[in-house]
Length: 96
Image 1 (cartoon, helix red, strand yellow):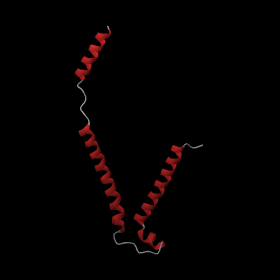
Image 2: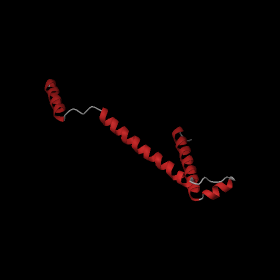
Image 3: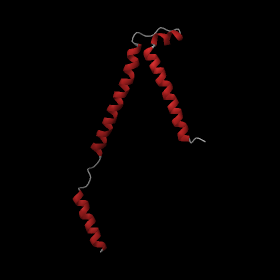
Image 4: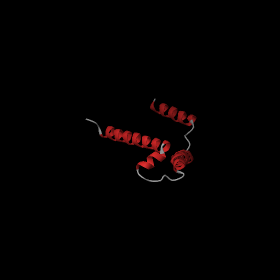
């Protein structure tokens, strides 16, 4: 029996493989692909086929960078190590 997570993972894998194969076919053989469905390919079809994923990847990288910057800007700095050690020393002395 497959767990729910494994089933979802398998589905994601299958969808990604199908999309990857379709993308490669559309990029390499656009004329043959459009002739199968009796349509005329747009002039810049291959350009957009490359430009859109590159744009999405670029925006994802910028989003991750912005998120890291926001996290660094809004996270308070850690306490100095000397302060923590002094606090631990005082606690140890109180126990003794």
